[in-house]
Length: 167
Image 1 (cartoon, rainbow, N blue to C red):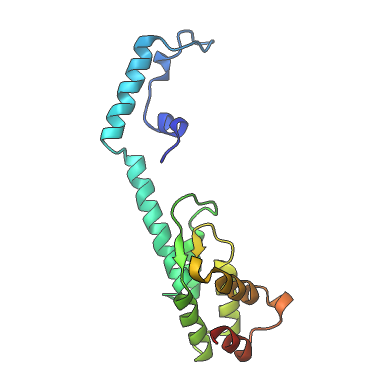
Image 2: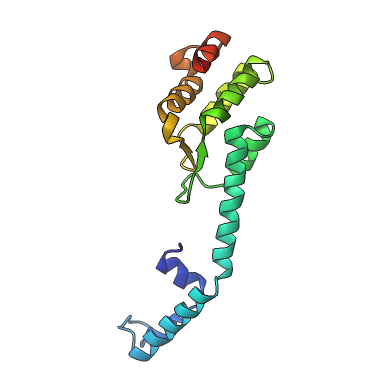
């Protein structure tokens, strides 16, 4: 939902009607307040273009985030796609499930992904506000993502480590 201030600023509200003197801000008159409330009521009944764009941006973002989380396309492509969005996110996150990560780990084991690609993927997924871990496997997901993204602390990624995650 758009905050009231942003909403008012983006909906061509005539603030001149609210300000009685150009140099002083005064309380709105009952008539100007009524006009403002009427305008807001009409906007609520008919979604504003900005709100529609925001919904489209959220869908685009979640599509890009899903592609990253599930590694549905080449890693470079999904990294470019998610980089188009701001870091902060207040919408509903994409839920990262254990089966998605297991699939990616299997791709590593079958040599479809390199050590660097797997580590880069985990680093890109870690701490994103638009990705949440499945509650049923959150500890496992956190352990895998953190371990893979922090190879400097946890040692290099290797076949044995990946197999231990899949047991």
